[in-house]
Amino acid sequence: MATRSASTCWPPPIAGSAGLAESMASAVRGTVNGTILVAVGEGILIGIGFMLAGVPNAALFAVLTTAFAMLPLGAWLAFGTAAIVLILAGGSILAAAAVAGWGAVVMLIGDNFVQPALIGGAVRLPFLWTLFGILGGLETFGLIGLFLGPVLMAALLTIWRQQSGPAPDQPS
Image 1 (cartoon, rainbow, N blue to C red):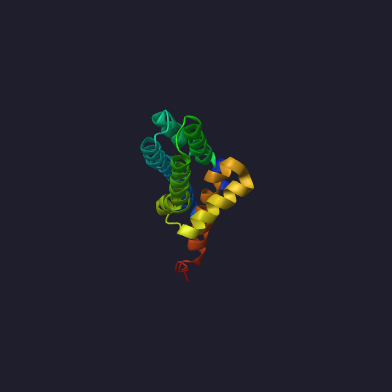
Image 2: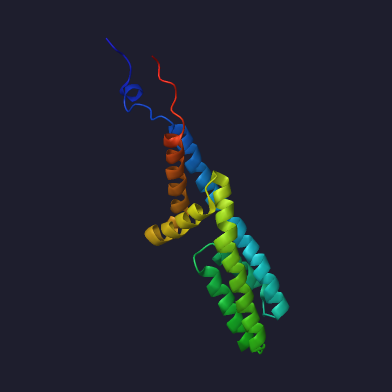
C-alpha cells in the first residue's frame, strides 16, 4: 500500500516555477526599493529648490514631498502647495513658478526614467516593459498596481524566456 501523502503527488511540480517565484520576488523587491529611492531623491532635489526659492518651512515641505512622492501625483500636490504658500507669504510669482517648474522637471525625470530603470534593472526587465507595467498596473489595479504591474510583467517575461529557450534533450 502506498503511504505517500497527497501533497507529494499532487499537484505535480511546474517546470521552472522556482525561477518564476524568484523573478516575482525580485520584482517586488525592486519595485519597493525603486519607489523609495526615487521618492527620497525627488524629495531632496525638490527640497533644495524650496530652500533656494525661499519657501517658508522648506525642510517640512521637502519631507512632505518625499512622503507624497511615493503616491501617484502626491509630490505634485506637495510642491504645488509649496508654490502657493510661497506666493501667500509674500514671495515673488517668478520664484513660485520656478518651484513648480523645478518640481515638474524632477518628477517627470524621476518617475518616467529613473524609477523604471531601477525597477527593470532588478529583474532584467526592459525599460519600456517596466514603464508599461507600472502605468498599466496603476491604471488597472489602482495604487497596488504600482507594485503589481511590474511583478506581472516580470512573471510574463520569465515565462516567455523559459518557453522560448532551447528545449532540453529528450531521452531516447
